[in-house]
Length: 490
Image 1 (tube, rainbow, N blue to C red):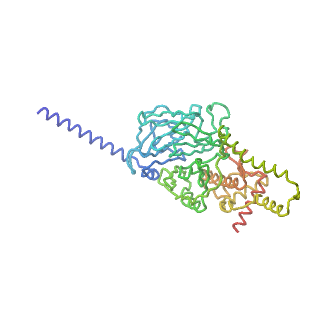
Image 2: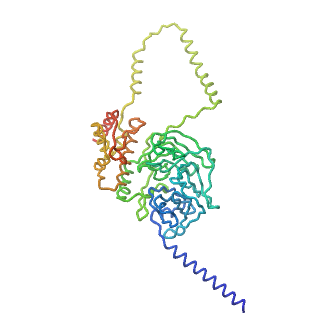
Image 3: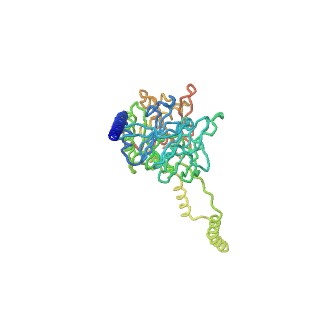
């Protein structure tokens, strides 16, 4: 009798505990809803590399200092789920729930914060990594991975340490993640380890392209580039999607631009729908690029290989690899084998009587002239006529005219010219950056220049603002490009 009473009491307590836990979980589960952008990511079974474009917090974290709310939160999608990592911390939160509703639950056991602001947080399959970052007056070049067992971050031992920041002062630093090869490509940051040294904020990247083999922990320098200011938006099958209408493939050392048709599709579906909103997240799933925010907006464009224009221009100049000793011996031996018959021919020829005329025959002269004429570069406007759109031509003409009068072009004048005066500051800045970067890319290719054609300097009246100009030595060439474009369009 006593035993039956005890069993009934234990059973009652067990049922009450189950009901209480179920009720509490359901109430918490329904408390939060994912925005459309993250719902789309969660529906995808595979991993998705997500790069946030703003510092707007996705979730409120009550036990972190308020300053962390304005530093940003990174998002990671693996086959195991959706994760959130607040900037400057080692905290890891996982989404517990379904596509419609759930909650963010902290799963890590880390303690220290403040050492990795501006780090690159990414994933290779189910492994979550954090590279570089700054804190406590130092910029680090450490590669860390999240240990699912200890629920803490462990360091990966590397052969060298390069200080690196994803957001490097005024610009983002370009990178590329090769998931299949487990490699990380980066443009060298302009930071140095000790930020307590004066003038560290005025350092300029030397444009070195480096690749890290994550499995072996080995860095390799691949070459150098002169263009380092890029807004990295998303990882795609064709490389990194940058500056809104371009792709850079550091692995293949190639550059691509949107075709006119794809550019118009992008303008229709993305630019007009953004309005005065801030672009928050961009990600690619297969051949589709998605643009979204953390409210209700989600837009996308379909990108096919034929929609991309191969610019036939390497992104960086590769380093020359030194030949090994045995390789040099083989080259020397082959050279001797080739040169010996040629030398023998000239020896025999010199022994003959000089009966031939010392003058080159007329038909030989004509042939030589034809060859020289064919080797002379001919200016063509194919690239310009295919790629320069009306807005770009309008902006080039304006800056060229101002520069000829020895006047700088202010951002206010450019905003008015492009009809941006009534748009938000974020939209103005983004549109100007896209146009000027695009123009410089195309003009550099057309003119064979390593330097930007449209340059900028800080305004004397407002050091936070820039003014733009074209150097006099480019006046004639830029004008010729504009004339050729005009002839092609007519």
